[in-house]
Length: 190
Image 1 (tube, rainbow, N blue to C red):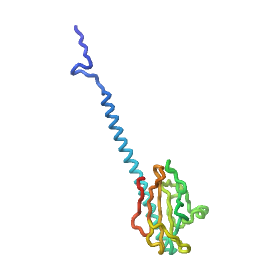
Image 2: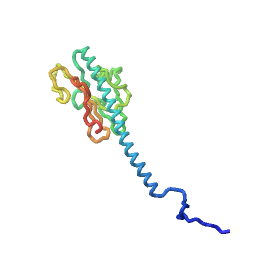
Image 3: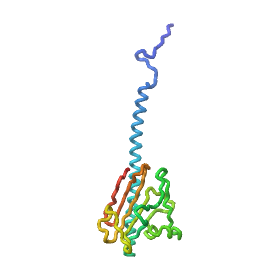
């Protein structure tokens, strides 16, 4: 009896498996899909965070108008255009909590504007933005930034939320004022 041996290159006979080129093509395709998916995911999470800040600014608008109806003036949570809360946001880990508990006398004294306004997060709730609210003080009127207020002679307020998600020194800046119908956004996806 004669034994026949098949050589792998014989027509009709091939060993099972993939060639190196086929495997490389699959790896390249997976790499391209992963790159697109990661970019889309980052844009999606940033937009979700921006929507969170817009909701907070909307809450500030409602609280400011309620405060104005009661006290005939708006309230500030900051003393300058560079003071934000929380003061130090950890942009690398996104692990910063609100930290204000207005039921505590010490926090009421330390954060009178936020406690008077009644806006904000729960004390241990994670915060993705720093916030600031400035308002016209009738006793010591100051000129607001033109970007937010067009008529500085009447009562006004403006609120800002900012974040630096990619830690490059450029902030996503979202703002709303007593004169604006919709929030403004600068560098939304910085």
